[in-house]
Length: 476
Image 1 (cartoon, rainbow, N blue to C red):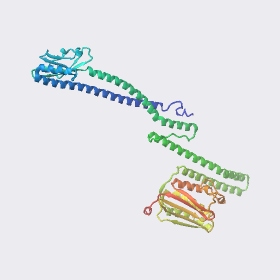
Image 2 (tube, rainbow, N blue to C red; image 1 turned 90 degrees about the vertical axis):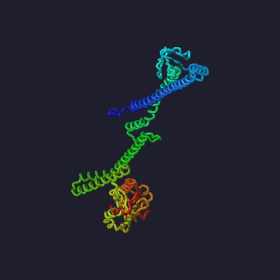
Image 3 (tube, rainbow, N blue to C red; image 1 turned 30 degrees about the horizontal axis):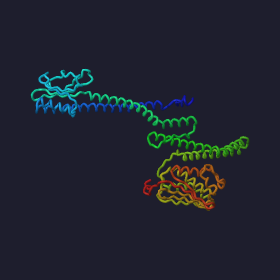
């Protein structure tokens, strides 16, 4: 089954095209609707403001003329209207005084408003009346007030100017609306493309990994720290972790293939000789040899896997408070018999109450490897010292011996897997002890180093972070 058949979209399809179209459409729709709503609201407010202004002018003029009529009668009103019209201080207004229902005592109306049939205006004294022009394109808004002598004073204003302003404003708004729609569509496309670029890059990286099987592809990370940038960073971190795991597996497999070739060849040769021999004792000895070699290879595989897990950060650590005084005593007791047989004195100098947060089994394994090495390369009559104490914010664990030391040309390579120096080849081992120690210590966030003098001994120092006080240890 090919990748495309398995459900992965082929390269010529745009996996983000439909998402991009939906995002762009939603952005444009929200932008356009919001903008048009603002435009409509602006138009409504402007129309309302102009209407209110015209009515304020009409009402204020009505109050003014009512006062003039009350003080000087019809003649005084006519003079006031004529004076204001000639001076141009007042906008053009319709003014009429009506007695009874239809008798017009005074009428002032601009000539341009002759298309209004004022005879259709009522004479009941309603506050507001509206009279449409003969063409129906404008309206005369009239306010009336009943005077003290029973006559009706009417003042009105045409909506022609207001309608013309609003018509021009509607034209402007139509142009603005078209610009808003164009900007919404273009902006939605640009912003969506920019927002989806990291996702396209992520898809491209995944496709490259699927196509080539390599994990060196990375997604560019922008300077911002939004959700997509965080996703890109996490994806790159995941690839780094996978690359590290694969590298560790490859190194482990290379090491196993290299180091198992010789024992496997030897095991096969020994088994073939035993099959060709009719000697029962020889065959029994061959089985014992095969069993020892298989156990040695199993130990090597297990140790290599532990090292790989620790170096790649996948080693499971059951962290808890570990009292070093008890741990050191337990490890030293395991090697008491070996030390006695070789005539080596093992001395412990552990600060009371010192402890670390660590995996007790793994830390015991690391300490046991260092002590085993110290006993191997220390001659009879020598001395091995295990020292544990606090040192600032860390805990220091030393394993010192008075053995043969480490040659200067071997020192840079002692932490390598399966490396055995010339002086160590006489001792039985896998060449993995120090590699495992270093991997375990690094997995705990600590460091390990060595100070050595050839012919006088070596001191291996483990430093682990943190520690607990003596009162806490007494409660364990």
